[in-house]
Length: 259
Length: 99
Image 1 (cartoon, rainbow over the protein chains, first blue to last red):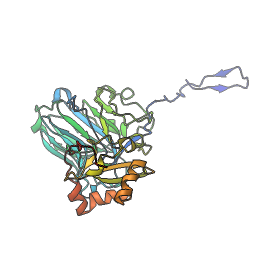
Image 2 (cartoon, helix red, strand yellow):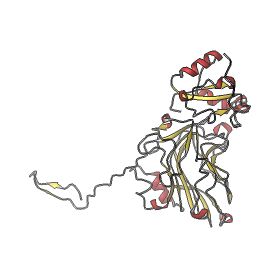
Image 3 (cartoon, rainbow over the protein chains, first blue to last red):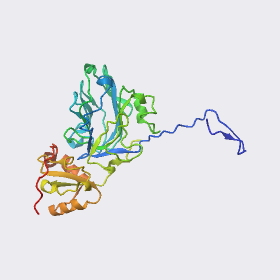
């Protein structure tokens, strides 16, 4: 229902058909988490010994999506870990290597490289979408970058045992320098169209409720959105797989955002 | 790096004097130690905390901004050799420091 057209009489107006009021969403991406690349990182709670389970029962399709920005995609010659799992059946990791390539490795199908050329100081929305019986796809800013046959790993199961580091490797080195936000793991593959919806989400749609595919959301770290209030641990709003932040405080909440 | 970050590398013998609530490091164990466990890195935003300033004054050192520290740790051979591998933290000294 539109606001309508007045007829000169303040007490009378005629509704205008078809002029829909755009919905208002409550999850704008106003914040990111900033890492210094030297000492700041996060881990899932060691005592809980839990990591995100990739795909239903560890064998289902999944998609990891997030925004990142770094001042040096090559890490000055050192890998930069974004996610890193230790102590699990498949110690998978997502990292930028020393040539600035984004890689997922340690999966049942080995590794998969994203050959997109990332630039310094630029926000990118990236996703790795794995159809376990067929293809793994890297999608950058809503467009497919790379695709690989991963059918060899079908049936081999991820587990939820282990510890996941955020922005470092298992010993706390190879730290990521830069910003992350809107980190999500989905229990399904994601099409370019769906990932474009995330990439262009300037309306502030909530990952957990406002997308047609929200029910596939398995883990979600909003990175202090939409409130901007620092919390330690950093909350996973779907399954409470919260991430303990080391050597960080409210100054790690950044207003540098992609949207 | 938008934040006004500063860093100091504190020798083991002085690390017991660090007031952890003055810096961003959670504690002795979460802080980053160098490869041979002889120095610990601490960092903060803005003005140097009082306790850290006292330690640095004794050591005749000055805090380093993020750009300088990042350059040293990640881009110099000396920095990489001393800091790239991250060991578990050493045990804190048991005996109180002699005055």
